[in-house]
Length: 216
Image (cartoon, rainbow, N blue to C red; front, side, top):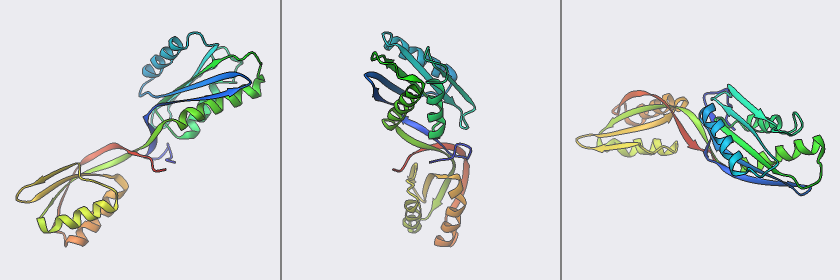
């Protein structure tokens, strides 16, 4: 799991929905990627309209690469039994820019505060389990210019890092645009220099963020 305080953090590649049942009460967790507070609020309102007939639509969201902005709502459940436990699951997952709404259809049996905390916590976990997660990383974009004789070595070194060229141009020389994790860029350049006797010209184009699917 990526550390949200580090240069990388977890994000949703696709949202999902999970369900948990406790004493005939249904808890439906809908999870969605939200980049701003406005998006999160809009998503929560959308779920409240969709599940207008439910007893509760509790919510939580976490915005920012370090979770700078968080909000949660018990939506009528006893204070601290829904929104806060839901938010704790989001924060603990390391996923950022994410919102969740847990819809409860009451089953006729009171669960008590402990039961509610457990149910809302488990519902969010089920929702997150249905999502596809990636890691947002800091990347360095490089432009490589190589002779045809060196291309095989270049592609081999890139392949060892699981990197494919973003763009390729085969003309008088071969030009490859590649995006590497920031922490890998320097070691890659050293390896490239050694493998090709410094014949490959390397130009740093800039730094950017990129998402890579999380390995399971």
